[in-house]
View (cartoon, helix red, strand yellow):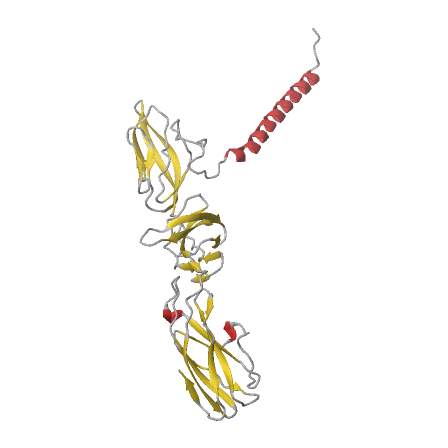
Length: 362
């Protein structure tokens, strides 16, 4: 055997110690880089348990996040323990089975995140574990939707609603579910269509006449839904023309070179439901002879004509006369319902006699 000098032996020993220190340092560095990955963020009630626990008392989920009014999936615990108790008591609606240690129930009150210590006994010793629990407030019920129009003859219905107000202890609203229903006679509203949207409005296409309503619910970030709102005001889809009015009398007079006329008619009706007081009447006129020249209004849109709502008589603005000679004037009244449908009356002829002045035609 070859004996190394003392200095050389010291050198080998120092090198070995240095290598050992380097390996230990490397091991600590590796542990340090792994430590943040072992720290878990809060999990929903569907996550598996892998968090730190005192002893070997473990629940099937390391964190419980639930919502008011939504039953939780029961939490199960490591078998072999008894005498379970919690400090403090679990949130209202959640129950800890003192024998099996399972936690179940339906939360009834929102609470901020809090750590609950669960104690149990095994083989004469007490063991404990920690369970963070947060109970979110139930999703907020939206206000009733509002329709763009209460009457329409188009195929599209549009409903809007105010965004739900966020509860400080609730998950944020991320979507809405809006439903369209049709109201029948003496029956409950019939569900026609349901759509999910992230906007606070819903658009529906309809093919039939009738009365429609909508309701909406909010959906929070946990996927839980609120109760439905109350129903919107009804929307009548009406594509049927009203029954036309009929002119019954015209009273006319020439004043300062202009014709002033009052037109009377019988009340109209709407088979689809516009009330008589909501029907609008527009009156047009034109000369039936070139002897009496006035600008014709019967080629105009009813919306630009002299009109009245819920009445059966209308005094027309003064009609400028280009030539004052005996002639006939024809009048017509248009009936418009709330959906925009219109129905013209028959033509009513009025004989104007310039030489006799004011006259009436019954």
